[in-house]
Length: 356
Ligand code: SAH
Ligand code: SF4
Image (cartoon, rainbow, N blue to C red; front, side, top):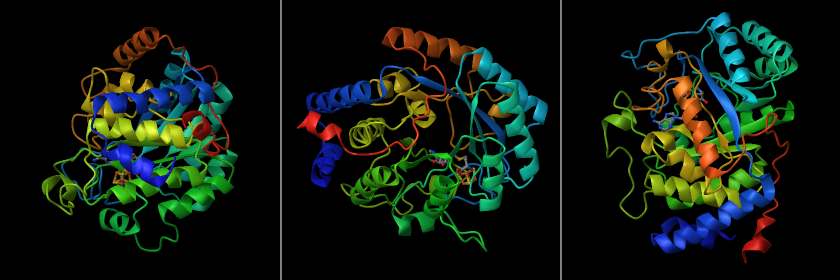
C-alpha cells in the first residue's frame, strides 16, 4: 500500500468504505496470524518514574499521584494467576523506576521462568543497555518500549531528555533487538502536534523496524500533565491535526495489519477505555490479535493512572477475565496456545497482492 493510499484511508469517513478497509485487515489477520487471540497478563509493578513525559500521569512532577512499588511475592502471585487463567505471557510494566534494582528484576525473571511456563515481557522504560542485557540473560523474552511518534521534533517537545542519556527510544529499540529480545513498540494516536504525515511515517517505520508487536492507542489527556492542562497545547490547525478518536485508532490498527501482516497487534487498553463495551472486540475484528488483561492487584490499580478513566479502575482481574472469555466465544476465536511469539515480525507487505 502506498503512502497516498494510507493517507486516503486516514481521511476516509464513509462507513461503507471503512467497512471495506476493516474487512481487508481482518482477512490479512486471519491469513497471516490465524484466529488465535493471545492473552498477555499485565502487571503494573511500580508507578515511580524518573521521566517527565508531558502526556503521562505518572510523570515525575505529578505530586498528586500516590506512588507504590509491588513486592516480589505480590508479583509472583500475579504470575501464578496468569498461569491459572491460561495466559501465555506476563508483562511486567512500570515507570522508569531505579528503585527496581536490576538484580531484583533479574531474580524475578529467573523465578518466573523456572516456576511457570510463561513468556516474560518487560516494559520498564528506557533502562541502560547493561541492565537490559542482564535481564535478557536472566530469561526475559520480550521488551516493550513505544517510540510514541516518529516525528523527532514533536517527540523532543513532549518527552524531555534526561541528562547523560546516549540513546533515544528509537536508538534503544535497536539495542534491545540486538540483545535478542522480541521487540514491541508503538505510538499514541492524536498527540497534540501530530500531523497526518507524521502518522504515515509511523506506520511505515513499524514495517522498517521489523517489530514483533505493534501497539497503537489513542492519546487520552490527563489533567495533571502539560498536555492535559491546555487543550490547545501545540495542536495543529483543523485538518492537519490527527484526532485521537476511536475511529482513527481502528483505522491505524487496520492499516498496521495490512502493512505488517505477521506482527502481533493488541487491542490496546487505551482504546478499550474509550469504548468499554466494544473497543477491544472491534479492534480484534479489524486487525488485532492480542489482548492484555490487567492482573495488577486492586489496591494499586487506581495509582497506575497513565491517563484518566483507564479500563480496570472499576474492574477486577476476575471480572475482566470472564468478560474476555465471553468475548472470545462470541467472536468464535480461541485463546492463543503458548506465548504467541512470532520472532522477527517481518514486513514484506506481502498482503499487497491480496488487496490489489
Ligand atoms: N514507563 C514505560 C511503561 C509505562 S507507560 C514507558 O514509558 O515505556 C506505557 C505507555 O503508556 C507509554 O508508552 C505511552 O504510549 C502510554 N501512555 C502514556 N500516557 C498516555 C496518555 N495520556 N494517553 C494514552 N497513552 C498514554
Ligand atoms: Fe514515565 Fe513511561 Fe509515563 Fe513517561 S510514559 S512518564 S516513562 S511511566
